[in-house]
Length: 203
Image (cartoon, rainbow, N blue to C red; front, side, top):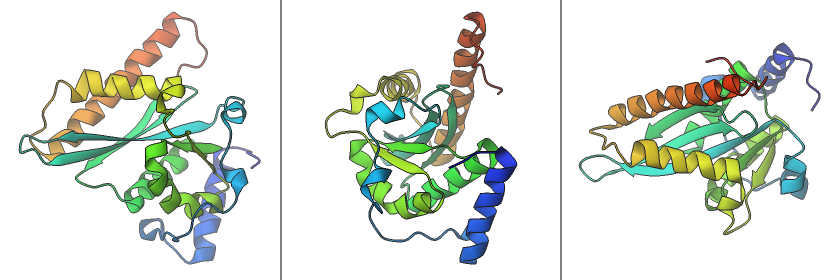
């Protein structure tokens, strides 16, 4: 997909939804599997692009023992924690809503990566991503740790936040995760500035 700037990407998204007769608040998902094999990309190819986002699905719990599912989206190239969402259950609709907001604000990535344990979710949103010409990457079974950026991000989130905090409610979980997201981005950015890395991002 050729990029001429964020405005071009926004127009493309708007055009897609207008042709479908949809509003962004009425995202509809088709129940079909990956359209073709070229949507699943090899690791070597992914390393050649700076536009790969990862969707992380992590489980925590509240004081009453009920589960909290957390969606975290990160940029594998800049290491930025782009957005988070927490609820008792995360549906494909939740994922597309959050990604759609990110596309409008940050542009469209070339690929979105899902862990091998999230193939069901990847299949649920694949038709929607296919319409936006976004490739889907699945890690090979049993090799979630093969992707260093993904593994380090998840370990830090679990160790620095989920391993220390017990949430009283979903609202508190969302607030804590969002605070941690901002702090994580500040620390990554500070490291880049000190190292003289031109890839430092705005917060």
